[in-house]
Image 1 (spheres, one colour):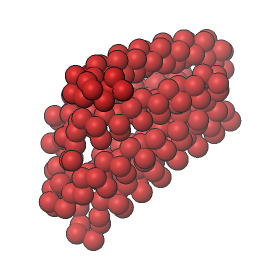
Image 2: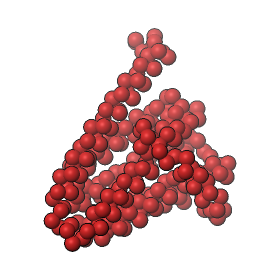
Image 3: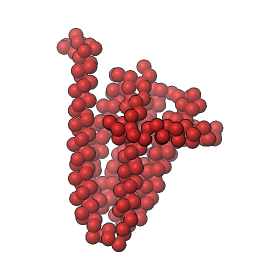
Image 4: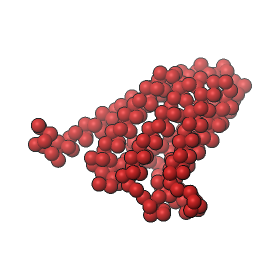
Length: 223
């Protein structure tokens, strides 16, 4: 069964058009897997830059650049396959989820090692996100739907919010030392709120999935 993609996040349409335009200009020697690898490099680079921001906030500029690299690689690999009519659905969906999990862990751990977020909270958010990702993968396998977003917020919006946060943190370097403690408190509360929201989404989707499966296979479900 080939899963259908549901791209409901705010920037889905302009992103789709931009990616198709970029994919049509990619040299034939480059393949989808090259961009998948580029996305991994971007995630590792962003996580490393966040960790190094402990020593100097200028590393947040590097983190923003690497988030852009991560977006390019992570988003262009599938688009390139579709533009060239070389999509490998099962392989592609599996690789999307596996790489997404690794990239999320790399960036999340890096943020936790920065001076702006408590490590334990960042790690907990990564675990919750990975749990939600596993549920999304199971949904794509069982129901044939691969949701690219939770509500109207997708990976592109999250990256843009991180870049905006990086910019705000670096914008006033003269005051950053005095503000770091305040930023950390605000960021911790924000991370905690996001984690609670993601747990709520997981609980709702898990309950709906069980209800649908109970209707589709009532006899087996009772057993």
